[in-house]
Image (cartoon, rainbow, N blue to C red):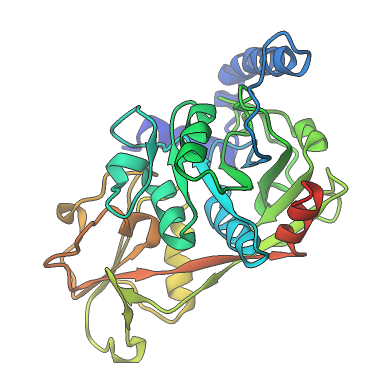
Length: 336
């Protein structure tokens, strides 16, 4: 039997009339609460705290699954290439502690959350996590006073933190839909009209519907896959042609696991088994299927700190290609 969250998420993608009837009143209430909360900050009734350096928020109006993390990594890397000393702050969803944590080479997913740890390892940018992003930002600047700019991974609705620029990531698959709704009847945290107030919109994972242009500054991103490498030994690449009669399984604890499985199939890999875990799941060795080759996502790979006795586990790296140059747009906008 499917679990409740699976039924709801399926409803978000293909609305069920009965569920819509039940959930629509709750979505209207959620919309009023969300609008009131934002208005309190915009009007100044509630104060947003400003950090000493510019803050660029990269978030979404969806409840996850928009492909935001690779876009943050690409933006930060692009800024670094332009000589900008940039850091990252995040809530650190799924970590075990609520205390502010400035990441270091010994940090684990339990300390930082899987996505911040992945961003830290991919970009090398100073990174801090905390339920209060303002406190995370202060801790990051205390540890790295040389920083000129902070990118907040997620937090578009975290209005307690003042932002100098907002970038919203929106999935291409939803750009032509007319049945989107706010939580819990739909997957939106804020209405589509919110996109008109951000500085830029990045359409992820495909081509946008021709009529979708909520912002003057539109960007598009697509995912590029790299060579599959052995867990914790990136220099060792998987010989796809040599898979032969080996059994191959794929495991993903991400919001849209089918995207990962399809990417592997598009590379010509025959999957004997796929295992879809909940997003941010605490994946462990016991969760891995019995196969000659097990391929996992980079987001899941950071949860295996040493990779001991996991020589059969391999990782598919991905990166986002953003067009036009989002890093150039950001650096010009905030005058870095």
